[in-house]
Image (cartoon, rainbow, N blue to C red; front, top):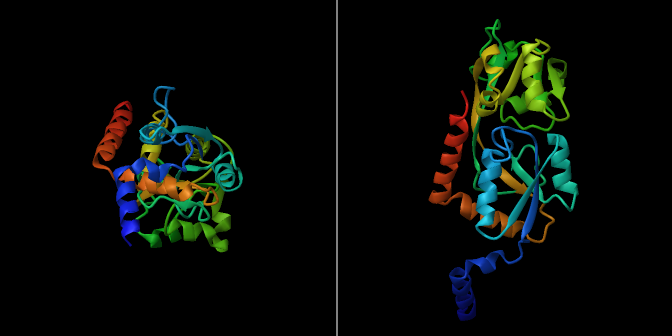
Amino acid sequence: MKTITIATVFLLAFPSLLWAKIPSKITLATTNWPPYTSGISPDKPGIVYEYMTEILAQHGISLRIEVYPWSRAIKMASDDNNIHGLLTAVHEEAPNLLFTTTPIMNYKVNFYTAMDNNWLYQDPRSLDSMPSPLCIILGYGYGSPIDEFIHNEANKPRLHTLTGGNAQQRLVKMLEYKRVAVIIEDELVIQSDTNNTANIRFAGTLSNSPFYAAFNPNLSWSHEIVALLNQELAKPENLQRLQHLVSEYTAEQP
């Protein structure tokens, strides 16, 4: 018991030893999701892109971020030894991965329609009267009750699913051209597409939900990197830095 106590004290005194198994370079997959994982210039690569890069750099870890269509990013994070995990995700999207328990930040999921549509989401019963089709992005987790709605086979005819790259931009275009009746997207993502926000109508909020970093559990250091990020993402100074980044990115929107 005395030996265990001494070892514990030693590790607490030199916390870097706890992360010794973590490699100096990590690669995470993501999708083009402005302003979170992508931005307007190399100097502004995205809120979470900057935030997570800075946090890991404090521990001498270089973060490489690769962008793919979302369903492919999830698959590569699960199967590809060169892709260690996902930069941002929710549990429903990749339940086989190991998630941080401390979220990176929250996102706000809204419904949007064309300007001449008066439908409004107020509660799950509103989905019964929702015009169709509802446009969704393959592999996305939207939270309850929309995930249950999407996975109900009876609702398949009421859905239009987007795959491939630039899905967020195409999502808005689909609504503008009235090829779909309703879309679901994060508030900041819609606001970042400044050329289109005047042409679509807010139709209610689904949820204000957290998202996380996720790693392939087969990595020998997966638990160590999750423990490190859980610690760092909870620090007041890092939370303050996050709020500063959010303010920077949102201030640049007209």
